[in-house]
Image 1 (cartoon, one colour):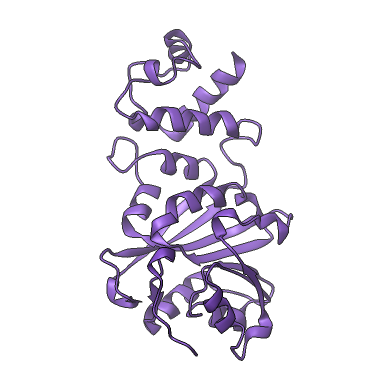
Image 2: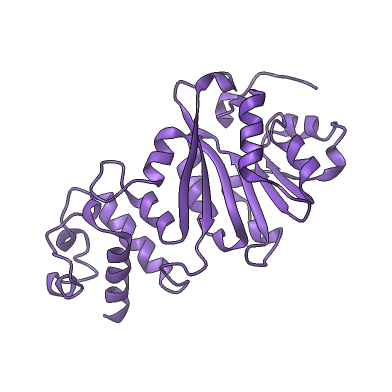
Length: 260
């Protein structure tokens, strides 16, 4: 196995701690009937045990050298390799059946937020999603209204998934050691999302407008979508800021816009 140095441009930090690897595998509990998709397999720390436990395993790797190396492993015949950028990967080319896939990945910290939004475009394809991220990002994913970490990502996820922070991982579990702590999270798509597919574009537009200017009042950030009176009709004061609203209140605003 070629243990070459990680490349900074890909945000690579390779997991090597066997105790953490086992903890991750135990949390995911892969079964022979499962079809997993792994983002960023890297040097194969999670890939190898997944290849032995799951029925099918697709992996998405942007680094050509790492992809080549993985395909030399004894268990390479278990892999379906996709060479490319997960940020642009069409997950529906693997399956179009709802909840047919399980997603796993150590998301590069430099693209973790846009990658999460990309995954959300396909969330209904996944039975569950297990991902390792910078701890700060997981705190944003699980934040409560009124907190500094509550934002667009929090609400976009909560409308579609149940999000759990499972455990924190110290820098020493990786090579090279990152300057921040990591966390392992589980996302389970809701059987009945809080927004419909037809409502989603308006919902996401509202999130961009309101959290893009999070210190401004709703009557200002949504002035091109709703009047102050229309906001008030949803039971929400037009003078509040986005960070104070629940997910359900954003859904109410979405439905008000659609009705106008």
